[in-house]
Image (cartoon, rainbow, N blue to C red):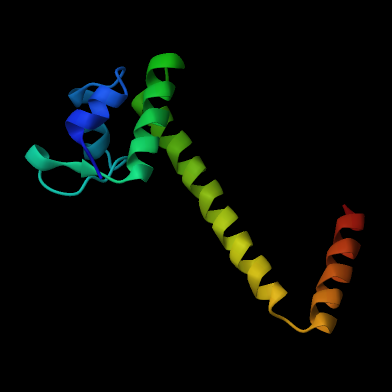
Length: 110
């Protein structure tokens, strides 16, 4: 867990105002009260992304929310595809072969 002070020291572009605004908008999810916020690694990485979007690319808050929502969707899809791959891998060989053939057929259709 990373405290707010550690987060601000690690990412000098960030200010407490940035972080407070992103927490209020639901983009970061610290544990604890405002005085004792602590951040998981995912929120530390997200804060870095948010800072880059705002400071380096000039995105406004609404655009940042859209980008974060899209990134979250991509991560969710990747997790779901990974689970699907594992589920397919647990199937009998004949089932896996039938799925591979169906995928090849559907891919060829374009």
